[in-house]
Length: 144
Image (cartoon, rainbow, N blue to C red; front, side, top):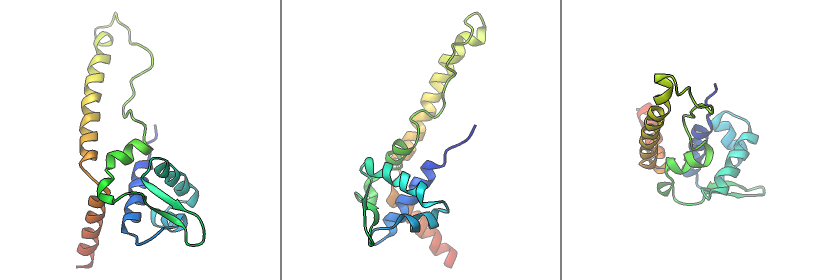
């Protein structure tokens, strides 16, 4: 089972855009992320469709934030690039004749709902501006 890195890459992209004075081309973003420009262009297109970034074509083109960084939550980003369900339950119903099988689905549903709500609350409390502040703080500590 693989884990997606789309969320981390999307947050990286948006934080880089928040730090820039103008449009940032996909090649520069790809260099920062350490991946290929095609992947960046796909993610930027998803972020643009969601109204988080704007893309400009041409020699001086690139991506910019569509709204202020303090108005983009990590939950906004998560909803754009990740599946809404973190933990999927098996598609087949367990055996109702089994004591565990009879109850496990309900128990797991309640547990995953609480976990999902906790994740979403934390992501909703964080913004791209806050991530940029943390990155800037880390850069200052590294220089000191």
